[in-house]
Every structure is written in structure tokens, then in C-alpha cells.
Amino acid sequence: MACVEPKLLGADGQFAPEPKYDPGSAASNLGCLLYIFCDTGFVEDVRNFVRTHAAEFAEVSASCPDGSHPLRWTELHDAFRALFEARLNCALAAECVGRDELLGYAEELRQSCLLLNDDDVIPASGGLRVRGFQSFVRNLTASENYDVFLEVMMAASDCANLRLAGAEVAAESWASFDFQPPERVAG
Image (cartoon, rainbow, N blue to C red; front, side, top):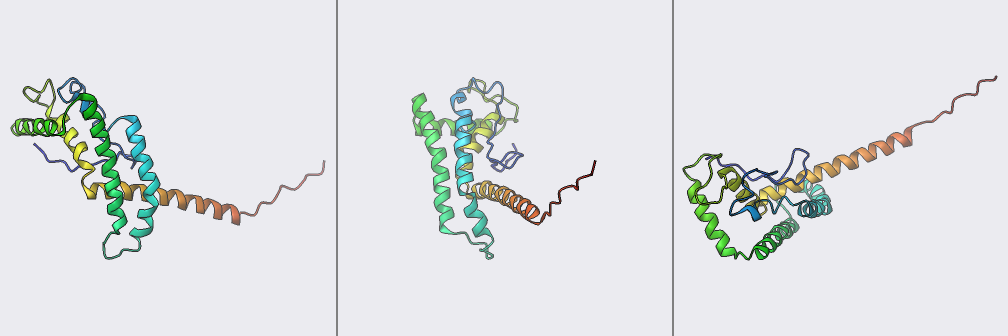
């Protein structure tokens, strides 16, 4: 079983958790939780958080040549993690599942996956495939990983910088543009 680094960015550089949807896994025992971080409303909440704070990463990344990070980034990471935690807690409450129960079941599934291939169905899981479980665990734990958080925020910061640079270039272009109306042709 390959170990895949958690990733929360889509091809467009925006927050986009996996899986997009894995047919067959939704009916599994974890079906109610597999896609909780892919819900459109939640994705938009996270994207809004990222957009709101992206500028803080643009300003500081250039001023920390030693590679250190400001304490503010840790505070923002805590807030980022809290978004995921609240979403998980809401889903667990809706399903009447306790956190310890989920963790115990996830550990059982993890143990069952050790000798299985990605496309195999995990025994006694209600049809959950190894790949679906791995995506769930990556999404569940990715927000805890500070490096993944930085990747999301830096990508948003880069996009914000490009948009800002594009707006400045456009403004400079217009400011230096010398409009000359066409001459009237005598008729």
C-alpha cells in the first residue's frame, strides 16, 4: 500500500479535498463521513478562510529569509484545524457516533487494509474500498499537518499576488497609454 502525502489543493491551486466521489464507498459503514470535507458549503467556508488570510502569508514570506514563521501562522493553522474539527463533530453528532468509536473503527479498518490492494473491499466494512478509506484518512488528518496548511496558504498567497500584479500592470498600462482620437476625415 503506497503512502500518499496529504494534499488539499486541486489543479487550480484552490482548496479541493479528495475524493471527488468513489462510487461504491458511499454505502459503506463510513459512508456518512467519507465526503464530509467535500461538501460544497464546507469547501466554500475553507476557501473563504484561505482568501481572507492569504495576504498575511504573502507579506511575511518575503521578510523571513531564515525560514522561520511568525506565531500568527500557528494561530491561523489552529483556526484552520478548528474548521475541520467542527465539521467532523457536526457529522459525528448527526450520526450519533462518538469520537472514540470512530477512532477505534478507523484503527480496525487500517489494520484490515495492511495486506490489501487499493481497489480491494475492506472485509466487514459494508463495501468500503481501501482507496476510499485512505482518502478519508488523508482528508481527516490533512488539516492537522502544518506543511499541508502552508501549501494551501502559500498557493492562495501566490494567486493573490498574481491577481494583484496583474491589476497593477493593467493600471500602469492604462496610465501610460496615450489615447489619440482618430482624426476626422473631411467629407
